[in-house]
Length: 124
Image 1 (tube, rainbow, N blue to C red):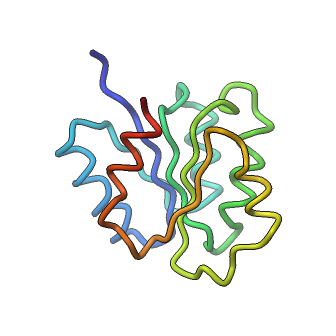
Image 2: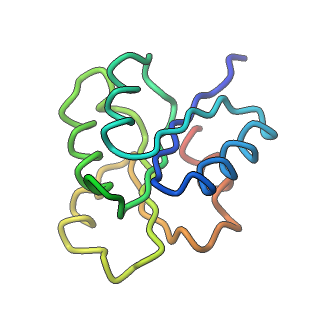
Image 3: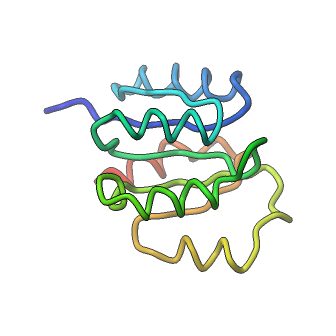
């Protein structure tokens, strides 16, 4: 069985490192990006990931923008996308509509307890 790859996009490096360590312990290959521009650069040169986990609010752009950019690029548009936010007041009707597709979800970043359960469900 090949190792599943996950791109974690967040401006908080402590969070990406935490997710990377936890994911690697579970057997995933984890790549980190510290924002949207770095994520786009990685996606431009990387084979499709099995999953992208992105924060909603970041300097230089937000998770909605990254989600739209990914869906416009044929090489990555089918990649499951998990959007996280610690500030649920930022969730708009537009965000909910964007994520209405079958392989995208929105979760509360502060409830880390079930992150890996959701990851497993999305990678089935």
